[in-house]
Image (tube, rainbow, N blue to C red; front, side, top):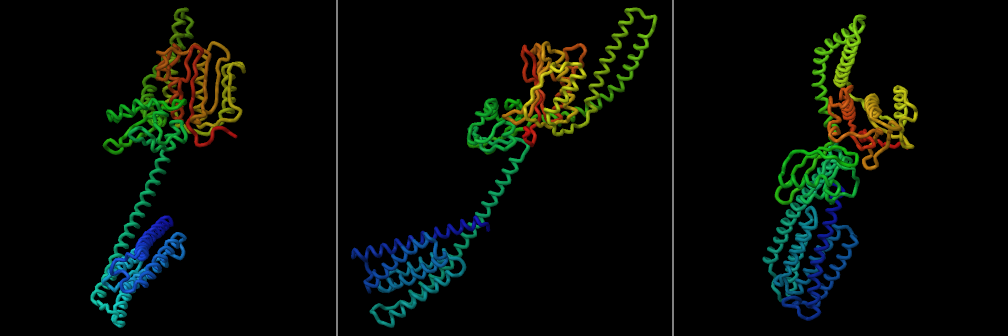
Length: 534
């Protein structure tokens, strides 16, 4: 038994003794009151009124003292129980003698005293109380017979009363044992339930998936750490409506409650626009029910789906390489040989250049598709973005022969940590910067911003150009494969960039689109460590 359960049992025992003492106080107070007002009913005090009064007053004083000792809990519990029971037996026997013997009915008070002592005590001490009470009753009858007070002894009554003491003592002890066993079992079940609830809470809190439990009026009852992170909120939200923090969820929840459909939904949470897949489940039945909401970040799900796509794409590219690349190489080689011929005219030379250019374009498309299928799994590592970006821009400007002021870089004074495969991050940023250069009209040609979001703690990098923006009909297709507005492009750059980000549990989105230019944002995954270096 745990220390807590022992303390609870100890407290309950003292409370029971308090009630027993209160009963003794009421009985003794009643006898003393009747004695002083001179209204003692027969046969109370009939044989010896003075002895009855002394015994009643002693009973009252002892019950008051016992109540005070219970409050200070001294002496020990079992000592107080035994003392009170023995005092009851002695004083009640005296009052019974002063009231003309067993016919006064005081034997029932002795029964109550024995029963109370048996219930409050443990072990076989209740038999001792019954034995002492029986001895006092029989001794009373013997004393009455020896001194011939005019009251005939009743040994039969005394014998049955003694038997009653033993029977009630045994029954009371058995009942008390059953109650104690039931309390112990209930205590054990309570501890098991508490441990199980704690275990469930620990499991829910450690789940990577977000878990929210709402009541029937959409108040938050349970919220694990993953859900807080995905929602971009902290503490102090329990028993508040979830729609206060996720207003976009209100309509979906109302529709679900009315129609009870089970199809998951996808919504964007927080300013970081983290895409989250939500599914709902009803807990309980009737009018009072809870709603279980599962939140799953879409990026890891897309990453798993991406692996399946890449497996299929790998088989496709192998077929493409076999069926197209060899004939394409022959066409390109034949075009080169034909362009070297001295008998070709100006018009024929233009045609051979067209063959070479389009052969190279088709070859680039095949290379890009094969690059996707051959790409090795990402190995995210911890990158210090500020120094990494400085190194990247130096390489990019040197490769494109740009001036040092052509690209503006805004970074915080303190370093920013992120997790991503460095090679794949280089490929993503290179593609975004080349796209921005292609459409930028002013200076600086590009603006790169690096920081950490205060709401979600996720690091990000923005790539902004000074172009004219993207038309709305094109914006919805930006990240689709083979979609391009350039005659020289393959339409795989942004698609591959997003795929690489999702392989690292990061996201790539069009953050801003206006007449002043576009901003693409890379939101890195939420790292386990602090992003800002101290």
